[in-house]
Length: 365
Ligand code: KG4
Ligand code: ZN
Image (cartoon, rainbow, N blue to C red; front, side, top):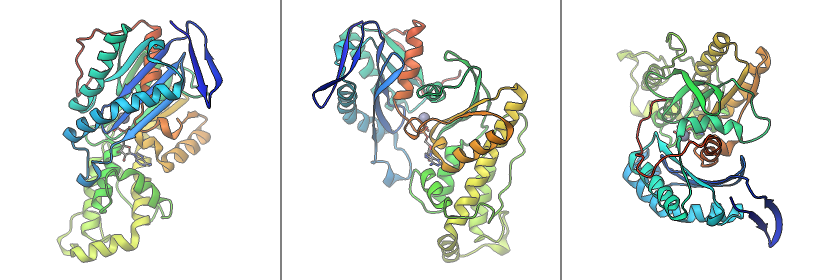
């Protein structure tokens, strides 16, 4: 391992002594091209280029995502190294997202990481994107003690994960249909809001009454989730211009009435939808905590940026005596810092892969 000196405004501000593992991490599983550098478990740079090209299509277009990753990856990695004060020859390993994700998007990050690993003759670390979301909770202090439970809520996944150590975790509950992020994004789409709608529902919900409208809570056994029924009920609710959330031909409103209803009640509708998504999530999380007896509770994934979920989790935790951990905003949505911290623990375990390791769109744990 080599020394690394970090400069800012030409002044030496940091010094990496010999033998502190320095890892460059790359994330490219969906529509964020990201790179981060981690020195001995401390994130020293975290750069994200969010692809705007998808907005006009109302969702991520896989081919466009791959192309944008190819354009972004060199400047993003360059910037992450520059911010860290490290040069390529000071890196000890390269970590990258191997799965799950869009296959073409994953391939761009993987090929880049493999090429660097080959050129620099340093080991390669494969990271599972969902495990990395969980370990985002180990980036900042205070860190949760093991074991902890993590509610991982992203655009493609909704899981309750029991984490016994950085390298030992298991999914104990998950969605049987849509993910929580999809529930936000699809609701937003029905309301005519652009993609990704989650942050916009959050924004309007802040000015609305969460008790204005009632949406049903699904009755799914065990620790699993379901959001598809909620989506259907929102669809009927809007088709009926708020008169009912079950299908009733006699209530069906004209497109004009529906648009007017949404326009006049957007904050209340968003607050009520958000409230139901959050109650579905927190009720199952509480059940998991009761069943496992674990009181260290974390949250992760893009939906954990939601202000209602963050405050709801904190107040539930206060009332039932949990130690609640919520990552900083920049570590909730997709980022490479979480890949770097996961890579760091794998590095300590000598958990490396060969250059011919494939990427996979889906990956079981
Ligand atoms: O973890 P993430 O960045 O990407 C995936 O791995 O899927 O999660 C993206 C999801 C999207 O569905 C987005 O709408 C949602 O996170 N999201 C939010 C908020 N910020 C991002 N949902 C609700 N409220 C937010 N503030
Ligand atoms: Zn993610």
